[in-house]
Length: 550
Image (cartoon, rainbow, N blue to C red; front, side, top):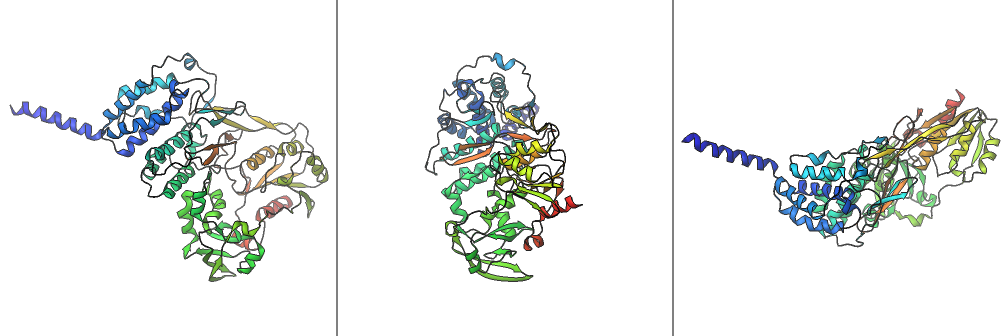
């Protein structure tokens, strides 16, 4: 008799343990809902074609998700939701094997087979949707250009000036952006933090912000999590948080210290007794390195080099018109208060006096390629520099659209200089390799050395310029890591109407080497020193000249 009673008890304990294992936290349920909602948005034929107001459908399902306590109940919520969307007909086009070379480092739908969260019935339904996914023009995403195949997010309700206390719209902010990156950001696989982890990490910050500013900072942190120098967030509220008042200097972060490298206004810098080479170690009694650590999650950049470059806005700015600094000058440490100003008070204009080209000592040609705006100037410059023993192309300032024409002078044959990956809208999350693209000419006109100067200020078009010129016969690239944000930019609006952007095309060297996050290839690396900055040296240019004269 005891043995008979023992079995039901063991069965009950076993059953309870199963359910205990499958109980889901609020974060798990919402993260799963975000994935299901995004998957159906871009894959389900009746959703992707715009038949449903997909934001409202999310708001309808959220209360049902909240009441589900385990994976069985949650799966049933999703199953009922999918059934309500209508029958999915078999997709004949989806079965056809495409003669396409896919890049699949971003593609991962393995989550639909997660047995800890989904029942077998739900996983099978999701797999069926994948295999019979929507084809053709979509409602929520399209190609901005059929030729370039850059994604363009369309027909999204912006909810401008929405009440930040609206929990549904806060979750929509996170869900929408997370899925846009999940399926249409070519460098998603390169993020420091796995994109699934980002979703779970950011969920509490969107669920429980204490103030409106908390919500905007959470949005900024989410965007920065892309690790993309292009991924900016145009929002005055976050600008105000970091402060509208500037010191009248610009600086470079070296060895976790702020070294003054120039002035926004010479008179105001002199008035505050600030000098080139001053090393600022503290701001309002806080170490510069501590400030950088605290603000890092808000500074967009593909790599640490660009993050330091972008840090100037976040490090010494503030909400007050004065700041106490600790600084080192001539080996002596001092402390004093400095006035800060609104940027408009500087009446600042970027330096534009530098020559487009000139001949340096020892018959070395130099051209500031960013100053060359017109194609017709290229022959004139190359004619003037044709008898030099080397030409230095400085790619560290401004932007130019003339690299192809300079490349024609330094190559003996056309060469591949990049290839790209573009999103396949008929299979979201998968990317297609483009053909390689060539630059250069079949007739070498300049036979001397060619040197390219690059650093962290080189981003996007400037990095593309460097890649194009690197096809030359006798080219050496000198400098420090570039921004690592190549390719065309996709600009779109967040919930609330605030603009943001990402790199929309993945750019690679012909051999498959990534440029996103890594930057362009560098032959001679130069790491600027505090001593060199204090002395006012252009250490990258000096190293290039040394290489030429060797």
